[in-house]
Image (cartoon, rainbow, N blue to C red):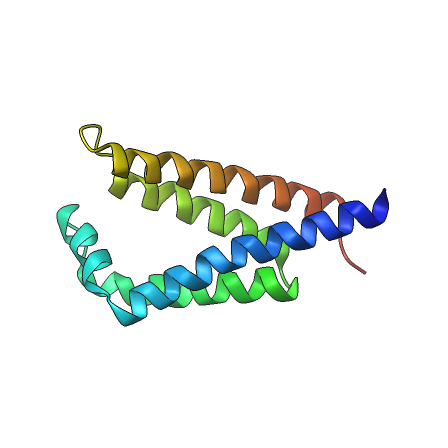
Length: 121
């Protein structure tokens, strides 16, 4: 059972990492979409670049298993904050993204809790 748990957590970490890596690539290649969301909320559009770097750092932490508990907490908070850009009740697609961000945050909180209880040597 321990091995199944280890492989399951690794698979979950890698799947989450792909999400953040893809977000970094998307922001890096075509930042206009994220900049538009930032501008629509009155936030400075240059925040796309620290967000891109944070996505890269998060993906690397998840892949390599470094600073997992604090990074998972930070990524969960990031997902909660960025979900607010998608809270558009009249747009089912955006509401789907809103809900998915909260689900991802939930998974990251589970990972953070697991890592806090089972620190690596």
